[in-house]
Length: 88
Image (cartoon, rainbow, N blue to C red; front, side):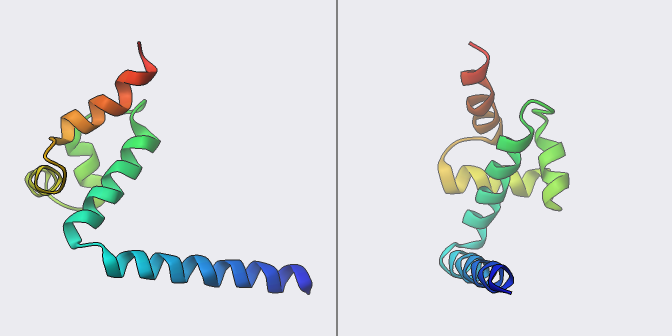
């Protein structure tokens, strides 16, 4: 029972943290955050911007415009910078 209570407490704290994070991030920042998480998980698999947009269920143009607005960098630059350090 103790393990279940600890596990439930950790899950509740994690969910609260996620909700708090979403409250402070703009929609664009959330898209960027989700995009970079996908890139870190998949850059060895694909560096195709359209693939990432599809996974995020948004258009390629919307992803690229949002990322550029939030970071000043293009999606391709972000993907490339994630891929390059591991291939020098």
